Picture (cartoon, rainbow, N blue to C red):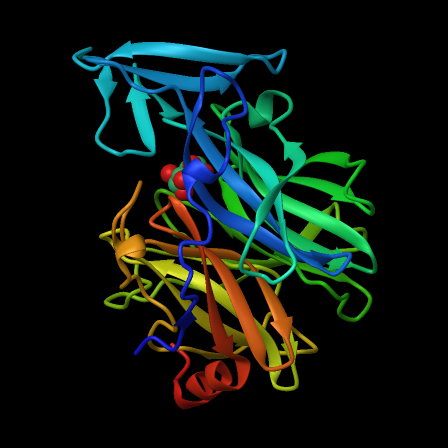
Length: 350
Ligand code: MAN
């Protein structure tokens, strides 16, 4: 049973709530926001996915040129070299492209429910980000914000890092995890003097889509990689697992909300508890999802049956999870941390 209390106002944000970033583009999805508090406001660093409206018999693939300008590849739907059976990715002449290009747009709110767009936009920069930047986690470590996001190009799917202290100027640190990797969440506190991050490398043959832990002395260079959470055959998280936002520190351990999907690409949320002193030790894991796609806006959209989170706000026992629903909308749900911990205590580690 789902233990989420969904906001009555869901979806909080829909594609029509934002103007496109260029005149020839349209906004098709607002999804997967990074979340942080700043100057008394709740802020969402929203992934905006845009494309060029398709025309009769044609689709257009947006990307950035090497000089960061928008470049559009025009393809005929009956082209024998085109495979277009996934709304998110196409294959043309043996190469994969994304159907949309994503950037990050800041929204803010006084009440955590009604959000308005701010002028800040972060776009992909350079070759490694030419298909866009996505699904940003925001970690506040001693007043410095670490933005870890998926950087996509035909070189692969990797993880970029930018940092800021004022949300005005940003330092671009390039890729911190090479392809294929995504879902990087840096702990908001050092453990035994070291930075820790969760990450999700993928393998197409031996191995899988598992959550790993890495350590760093400077937050930029990562080592001592350890695989800590795997997919579970026959479960709701049988095909892929990936970290949500930075783990929440509780007396019992680091509580991490993660997404898991099965072979049908149905995305739900679960939780794991990591040892406070050594986060490579998994103390417990929920057997069943704590949230699964059931509302109409979670079942139907750009890519249906998806609940995906990479950001939350903690107020005492209250956990507010912001999430992408059906890869198209932004929604919110409240949880009790105590209730999640109770679910963990009842479950067995598998
Ligand atoms: C998957 C999905 C897409 C995303 C690509 C690249 O196909 O998560 O939304 O654009 O990966 O990261």
